[in-house]
Image 1 (cartoon, protein in one colour):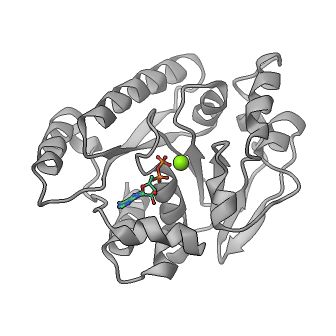
Image 2 (image 1 turned 90 degrees about the vertical axis):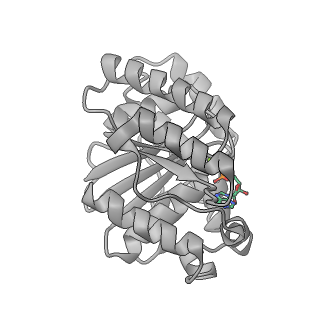
Length: 244
Ligand SMILES: Nc1ncnc2c1ncn2[C@@H]1O[C@H](COP(=O)(O)OP(=O)(O)O)[C@@H](O)[C@H]1O
Ligand SMILES: [Mg+2]
């Protein structure tokens, strides 16, 4: 079982879009996928139109969550929305607070991939996610500010791996909102290549309005616009992740 966190320290860098479409892309190639939402924004529950009784909050504090089937081979655990903020406060006082997610999912089986969509913050919930996961995907949008976000995330990965999880590694850095007609895209990718080398994915996610529209129709990109650039790029990413 591979456990992958989708993380960056900035909002709007394509984490949720990547989580949903990478998860569905892998499911469409026959992998059994569990998608976990660890962001109080609760976008994944909204897109898949589920409101389960037990969420990530219950999983962390009470060891039980509803695992809901949303598509063939694709299940989700909802974040619990704003309750996750209270959950984090309660978690602060617990013994072994960094290991709760790992511990409470230790019996999970029958799954090929766990994908965790993270909130853009350096908080205890994300420490739990990074202690549970072995691999991190860092989506980076094509601008300077998001590179600063990437540096903060590298610091967090480094400190979590030193303190709690020696297995943690970067699976890949993913350029998103890529537009080959824009100089800033070409420049940003050149900087990323230089810095991350083989950790930069060969797949770039192009700017595609279909990716923006799909969630409001409660669809993944493969359902909303199967021939779009977005669908092609996320399918390519699913294959690249599977081979890495
Ligand atoms: N490649 C893309 N092209 C166009 N719009 C995108 C692309 N990726 C994401 N978006 C849109 O950008 C916004 C932010 O993306 P989102 O995945 O929610 O980021 P995050 O989870 O990092 O905050 C959303 O409206 C999303 O639909
Ligand atoms: Mg998000």
